[in-house]
Length: 313
Image (tube, rainbow, N blue to C red; front, top):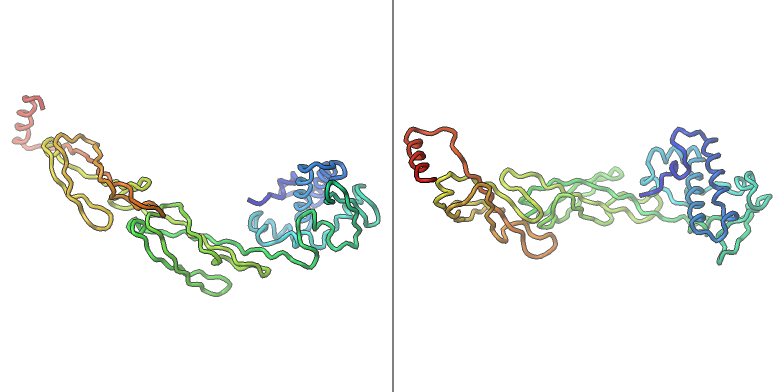
């Protein structure tokens, strides 16, 4: 996540240009390399506050930053863009730090040595910020795109071919891709090069397909296991019974319910669950048994149950 320039300087979005300038000067005096020789933490902090000030001190850059937000702004604008036409030497002279008449001391010399630059240097902060020399703009990758795709449980079980039509720059891009078997909600598929185009000739971003497996009317999924609910009568639970159980894929399987099965019993069907995502084997299917109790009884049923009660049942 990109730095929040307002937080870096300790100001807020309603702060005036003077407030921002005062905040930067205070921090720059504190972290300037002349005052913190060979202090890497101070060096990194000085870089951060200088970048933040270069954006928030410029009304147009600040407007773009407020519009896009920190993450999108960092993707759209390189440090070459951020520091273009920004005069650090004047700021340092105003603060009484460094040299004079366009000369100022910076801290990006090798081995702790300082180097002196003048305003004639094309890009005195190039080494400090790891940027290319003036005239060599860094090509930034285009923004990534994300799309939420709803899939059926059956589709996530077997895998499925999908296609999307995405509008970019006035053109429609038809994208075909495979949803792998076993995929679950929240997983993302990356399609390289199908994101936004770069604004300065860099490579395009990527497209991320976020999967949402929709609820099913019969099955529920927990990890790679599948659960199905089956209701049986008291006599079936007591005596045992064979029942037909649905499995994913549209088939059914005959399963024996043992005599004496209790309410809320789970019966495991090994290997009938979801395929392991990008792995081998499958999870299991579980039958959750619910023993029903009738709400009303005929006279004959009542008499039979009374007889069972007398027998200790």
